Image 1 (cartoon, rainbow, N blue to C red):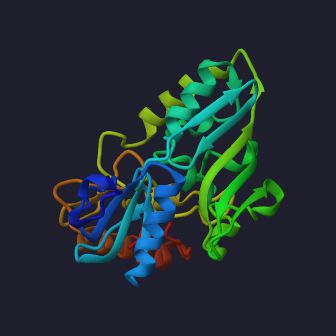
Image 2 (image 1 turned 30 degrees about the horizontal axis):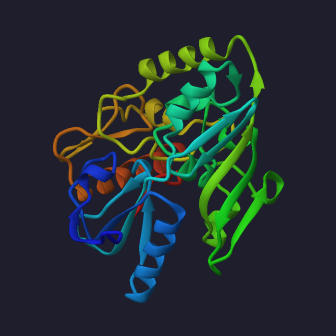
Amino acid sequence: MGQPFKKDQDLSKYHTYGIHAKAKYLTEAKTEEDLLNSIEFAQSNEMPFLILGRGSNVLFRENLYNGLAIINKMNKYEISGTKVYAQSGVNLPLLCRKTANLGLKGLEPLVGVPGTVGGSVFMNAGVLGHEISTHLTSVRVLQQNGMIKTFFKDECGFTYRNSIFHDNGGIVLSAEFLLTFSNEAKNELLEHLHRRIKSQPIEMKNSGCIFKNPAPHLSAGKIIDSLGLKGMSQGGARVCTKHANFINNHQNATFDDVFTLIQKVREKVFKEAGVELECEVRIV
């Protein structure tokens, strides 16, 4: 039986905001062959495609996405000594737990990042100064020309929440990391988990942080908080009262609710603090 391409599919369960949206076509890619078949399907039908892991860091418009949504289910990983291999669809928090429980140090600060390995590498995800690129050694990437190439870390152009793959349209297939043994890895993982539970709205529907930090030592959340914008709302969307750099789907929020609130926060911050905030969330 061939790989199914389902038509007119609801996307609300495939992204962390849970806002209603539809895709013209949807499929799951469990292998690299599935992924290549999916892209070929989209190209042969002259339509765009997007790849979704856990669907964090994305905000869908409520009209029809006139393309193919590919759900990344490539979730195999291997741990050999201090070397870790993970396909792009691997749940990053799960990998952090697995490595820490084996006494491997390096990924545990990222246990609170609600994404997959592929999406996290693509945007160089991080928290509190720790980035996924820190212990990465190489990335296998499907390039726009259809060729698969291995990029070593120093070829990836990693900067704050960015990589070369943003510009060249590369699709992350897998990544390799080199960690270190440490008796403290498991305890440090628990500390990071506790910090996340205490400071972030993990019980609410949201996309993760909305804005990039304007500078290494200038927090977007702290700026928003300092202006008294926690709790500011628009329809069903609300600036989080626990962490100001989150906008929650508080009560059946629509795309317009969230998008309008994002714009209001940006305007307020620019007017009163002179800082222009850049969105981290991707709008589709």
